[in-house]
Amino acid sequence: MPGEHQLAYALQVLSRSLALRTALDEPTPAPTGASMMIRAPQPPLHCRLHLWHHWKTFHTDDGNRYMACAQCKRERPPTWIDKNTIGA
Image (cartoon, rainbow, N blue to C red; front, side, top):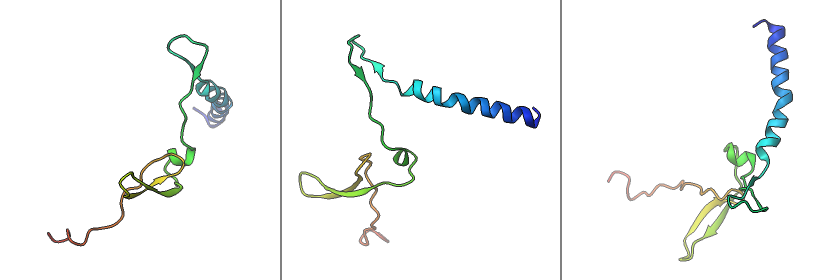
């Protein structure tokens, strides 16, 4: 495809991407046919792309601490190394 056709095609796809995004973001009807719409909440884009998270410390019911993102609730993997298990 020649260069000028590539550019025209790319602009055509880009111009229709907003309409596609709008159609995909519309809530789906409830399975029972009720008038209420169901929409699943999505985490922020930076969480979905794993660019950064807003880490916050939480506590379990038994008092243990863990870190999770305050926006998407993804748990942060532990970063410590148990020195007693090294070389065992």
